[in-house]
Image 1 (cartoon, one colour):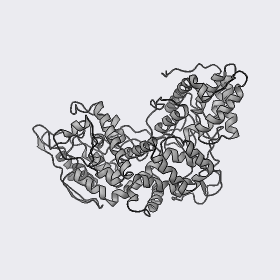
Image 2 (image 1 turned 90 degrees about the horizontal axis):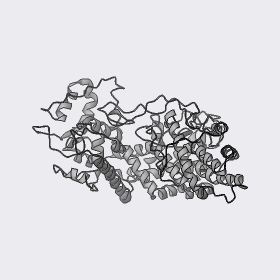
Image 3 (image 1 turned 90 degrees about the vertical axis):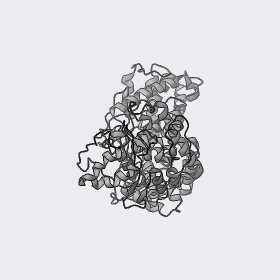
Image 4 (image 1 turned 180 degrees about the horizontal axis):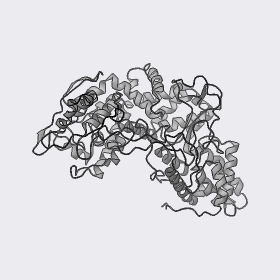
Length: 596
């Protein structure tokens, strides 16, 4: 069992220069490396519009304005400060930003930090541990709701947690050094054993062959730990340092140093991109071999790897994560309710909703590769108790697709009532890619409708239509949200509200200038139309690109390039998750970057 204890500080003065050379934070003291000033998004919208980058009711986001300081924090692609300092993780010099600097067709060369989930899987596979290494980390920053993005930074709080967990993991690995770093004669052959360990373990941690500078820096760290101590002490410090080094914490997309307008990712960068984007973890041996033999240089070679990874347990989990983050339903485990209003909303129900999404999406991945028409339109039932028990309350129709399942209906609801605005905004933004400005951007002050036991939720929110300024947006938002009023704030079917009961009204007419405009009896009927919509299919392609490309609000040009490429695919492929992933991996967008 790991304990959160600090390592003795013996020889710390000798360690620090080497750790700093590696870009490592030692003993929780961040080495301040300048960032780009945006460590994360501002969080969610107001309580009515619901989460996008933040959590439900505006919670869960990370404040912006980060300094970028912390373990291995890089000053940006091409600076050479932090990432790449001593470890050879590849921070390019950034020479020669060409005349193509403003071209929207290619993403910029960059460095991005591993997400919490990516870090945890990387540690697990590197050390063979079952510890959830990122459990104590602050939540990931999000862009467009997705955790894989360029906004991830190492702030002082995360730097402290990185050092703490690295210390624990290194100590935990010590009893297993015979397997991790075998040495038959640690007395006389310790340095040779350490060099052999560095070559194998270091290359696996950095996901590429080590450079001479890498080897020298890591060996110096080993010596600092072993001096006056033992071989085991040196290896322990070495593991601790590697786990905090930029070569481990960051994925580079820099290519070879070039003065041209564009660069191509190195084969090992391509292997890491394929692994983290489509598997959620580090490259396996087959990917590293493909990098070494050059097969990743071809679109066919990359496609073969994506299709292989998609069939692995990690690849399936990554695909499910993409779907969860697309709709924001990955937040179900953190969603809270007022149990005075919703006594059924227990931990068991939250976990049940999580498992329902997992089983539902997994079945669709298996049957169709993840068609959006099935994700939104399938009436397949996979719910188990207590979810199935709750679904049977009050009867109700068979639920169609993810939008009518408990995870979506609970996340996009308030603590004590349903939230038609949150549900409507999410469908417009995430499912149809219709931009909905936030009230903050419009300098509109939001005043939620007052509780009124004599009115339904829909009747209370109808006040939006009486104000011209509100009606401009809410005439688009509210009809979609009102179609979901057959479900309360935790997804229970209902036909009435309040006490005495008042019938709810789910009939709507949608007029958003999209191909699913029309009249609908309820959200089930709407979901059936969304499942067949070309607008939704095209939006799904955009959302998949956002989830895997890791670009933020400035990515419209790259999204357009991807959309133009996807337009050339067969119609069925354009709405299928695996085919969209393959299309991205085959494209120049995946392997080429423009110089900053």
